[in-house]
Figure 1 (cartoon, one colour):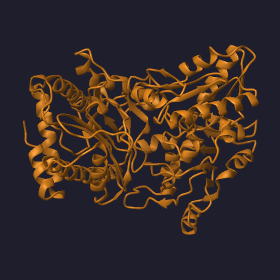
Figure 2 (spheres, one colour):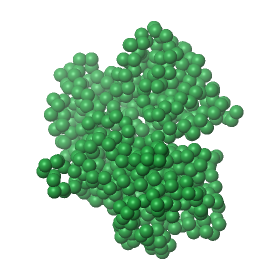
Figure 3 (cartoon, helix red, strand yellow):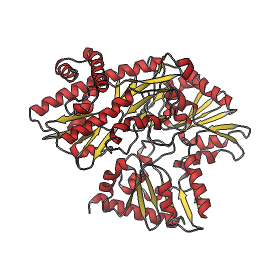
Figure 4 (cartoon, one colour):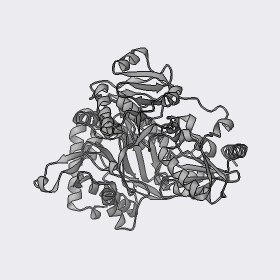
Length: 603
């Protein structure tokens, strides 16, 4: 048994002892923080610290005698490897949610016992569901404990990195205008105050950026809006005096992060507070005075920031071109190194590609940790090579590279698969069917307000016809120099709500995939912008949307099975490559230019 596994066993035992001390018979541990973030500061990575499972999503449930991690298909192989020998059960679920971890806990608890969760990191909507389930089962729901404080020695402190202004020309709308927009939305619902805890909403609304969370240019803070003022609760020293003065000119006062709960407790009894139940924790809701009325609805800023303006869209196009130029330089250098017989690994891919991105104007950071999966590692959708475990790239096979960058004018996310040497007929068929899905959805015209499952099926259709499928969604929203995963829109099988409908200006990924465990993986991803389409029948049948493909990088044509592509699909691919060549040619020289020209030759 390795050291990591020994550590997990000891940590689980310590947590179980703490549950007994607190008279708790079960505990629910989500992958979240007080802001319900997707990517967590280290302080709130309790699930990972306890179990050793490092996937970006998953739930842990624990009783005094058992412990389980619940992970969806993106993480099954990763979780099996990381939990091996720990004594922690892996429960494979088809999609993330409360239902299966809650069922696991209820099966081990008896009426009259106590089920706990930490209110400070538990979403309001999750808390409602847990409380209702406990009531039906005759359990007491207890939310005031964080057992990890007692058992996690040297628990990381809050991050406290400097915050900066996202300035013009890339910030295309003023802070004052954004605040006024949100206040108008509040007035329409009769709300007087608004609590915003989601970090991307706070950063977007105030035209601020930070680096408290890896890869996401956000900072840890809460924002409380009143009719004519706002309070920003943020770590002391993170905002300079000059920036505090600029915020004050727009009616925003900076206060210590720890004062957020007290400020909520001081909201007047006559107030009506707007809360987003998917983006506010139970702990914050409990801080409000008991008699204060609330409105539970999606944050107005979440909807507003998902709809990029014409000026923002143009900055994104420019960022995509710089990103594409970096990709060309990397792939040219990578191919040359391979021809020379240099030792190349998955880590080499990350290092070389990150270095090329760093050379481009406006680059700030990566937008997520690079996924470079050679052969069987490409079959792990969220694989990440480490110093301890990575593959050497040699011989023949498929190399999957999923990467992205943060630029002052946009956020990028791109996946390409490259055939190195000879590949099999089955690899070619898998690759081409995935490509057909990417092309099919990219060409789709659809009504304004279309919900995601209708679009998701279009990308899956070529795979379904062959009896194949993939376990992740087809697309996620993407921010504007913001989180690489941004709501509310997505393209997936999940049952949607009305706020997830497609609107003009939204940026979404299109990324169907196919994964053969132990063999290879294929995923081809572009980012697309929803644009209005002027159709002859617009007046009679409503507004229609189409996708503008934003991502600019050649798609490997060598592993294509030409017999599986029809004329329209081939025409789309050739037109895409013509656009890529035209847009990137002025930005690259030498070997990178030669590579671009060679890889964009029409079929």
